Image 1: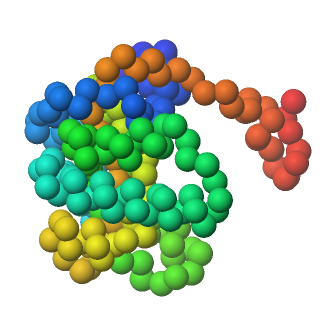
Image 2: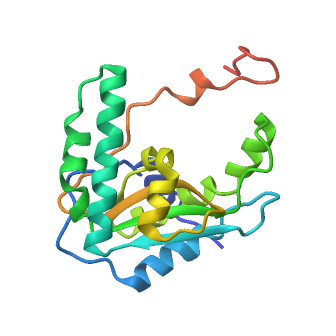
Length: 205
């Protein structure tokens, strides 16, 4: 099978965070979400196996409660770190309650231990699926943003969404069809400057 590398590279290179130019009035079709999640569950997994779970939230009352919680966490972080609020983040918290859907990427279970290797193995079995989901959404002109703030409030989120206690929340993707968003490649260091061969610091030329 021949792949269109130009299109694949374009999707991979332009999966930007979209927080503002979204169509808040256009609902997301359930079948489209199923199609994207079917792509996500083809991601590589580790010892945990297929213990991923996806919770789609599109009911107004739940979205409003989650949006208020997200705003509280973000404002606390900004105050603690004495950082100014970016316009894009302000736009997100202003409109988050209107987002067509929020997708929580969860794990059925918890890390077996808190060692570095244990954490890598646990989250390494779920985060590739979250990234695949974001790419599948991007390919369908659905904007999303990789957010992890709500993972700091696991119990409060679980109470809003009736999650069982053994469920671990990872990222939440606020999603909606893009509306006038132009997604381009970001300015990044070239591979030659961030890649070594055989020994640390040894570049291939």
